[in-house]
Amino acid sequence: MRLWFAVVASVLLVGAAVFGDTFFERADPFEVYSSLVARLSPFGRRTDGTLVVRNPLENLDGQPAVPGLMGVVAVLFGSTAFDSFKDSSRWLNFSQQHSVHPMLLNTAALLGFCLAVLVTFTIAALATAGIGHLERRRLPALMAHSVVPILVGYVVAHYLSYFVVVSA
Image 1 (cartoon, rainbow, N blue to C red):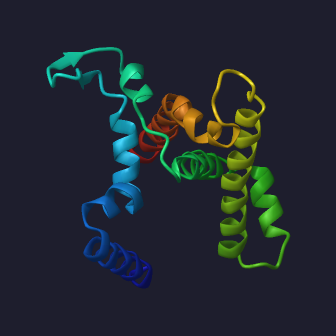
Image 2: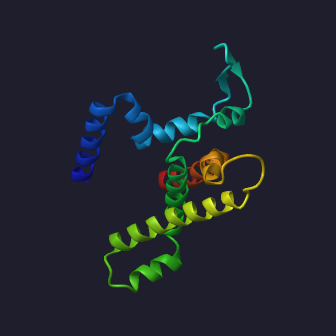
Image 3: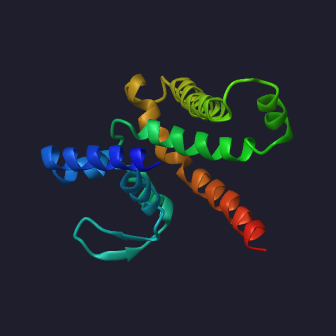
């Protein structure tokens, strides 16, 4: 675990030294996640800079379709879904019947969940092509922000129940 944190810290420090603050905005997982979720804030700014209270989905709609956004959404959805699935009796029975190390098996399944979300969302977004004038290949990134409220609700519901059960 220490080695993992040391590698992540090294990558972030080198990236910051080379690319500056922009590197954190685009590559630091916690910064990317918190910036994405912060778009659900009911507070926003008009073009003249005035602070306003508005529909949180209006702020979310302002999320730029940057490269990697679809990957972030896939990892957030896939990892939370796997976290729910890994404690199921079906997965426990499956993982106990195989001689593969549990960490390796769980890691492969986690990657599979993230990949499944990425592929299914991409296919669904591409299936909407022909609507409007948008480039087909940009559709997944342009639509990724639309599932953030579902993702946040799922994360809150999942971890809130976990917190209640563990703290009781």
